Image 1: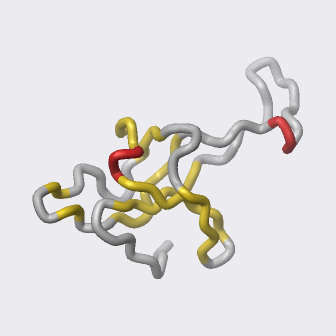
Image 2: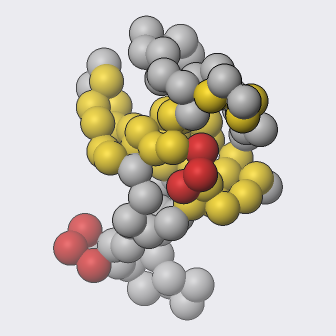
Length: 91
């Protein structure tokens, strides 16, 4: 899948993982109670800042904060755009 969006500087575009549909014990979670995902996959990345090259790349699975990023819709899909510094780590 190719996204026609190029983040600038140290920003990345993340496709959030789908929210959990059931608990470990099999209880179905209603839409109103689902928690925002805390991990996802980078689908586009900027080139970094002048003295700080990017350490993440397209395809990396990353962990980020619950309130990190801004939700945007591109070509009918929902993504998060955030700075690389909002990412806690790579899986």
